[in-house]
Image (spheres, rainbow, N blue to C red):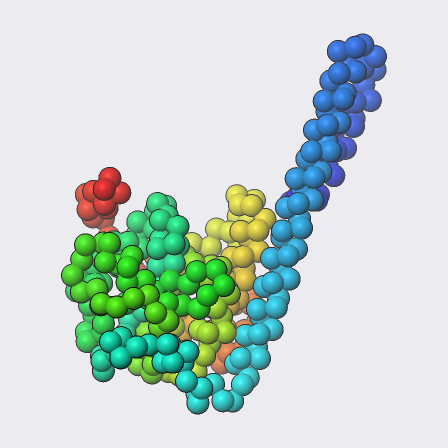
Length: 289
């Protein structure tokens, strides 16, 4: 139910209460005034939320159009990455491929949800034992910015293997992998064009999906979460190489949701699932710290 419909129904309910025959007393008059004040307040709140949702939807529509134009541009492969212009000689990368791990929500907001605990411990494990020849780099995208390294944050984890240098723009190249580990919906939506460009250059894009509850049970979330989650899913449906789900159940439901979406890329992302770890003692110790 939208905020507008909620306010209308609530207003009707309260009006019916106001029309009862026992509202002639002084106390009832006072109660009526209080209820009217509450109606006006709820209308204002609902109107403000509706305005925010409308603004968000307009922004999402704009980003979708930009993404379509970006994917159609033939010269993306020839354009130099912005990071190549910004990187200093000290930050020049070696020949090893990169595994860029998105930790936006954790790095910028110090999130303490179950997802962020998973993100933190997974990043620690990847830094301590990188897969293959990959060099693991934590990255984040602040509002209004493209993806940058999150080295300052990663060094705070107390794990060896964090590269030196500052939080410069990433310099992703063919053979690298971008892993959307954190549930950074807004960052992914806002940087869909940049991610599409990276994929054009040969960077593989993978994302982690924890659940699809905002779509299957929208009544459990504020309306703006449902809108953002749907936009996030449509974005990764267009640009992702694959999505790793945290359970078989999530994979099945995600596949069902993707099949209902029109996508612009050739084919839908590859789907898979993996089992979460159970190192509660390590995670609990990290939270306590």
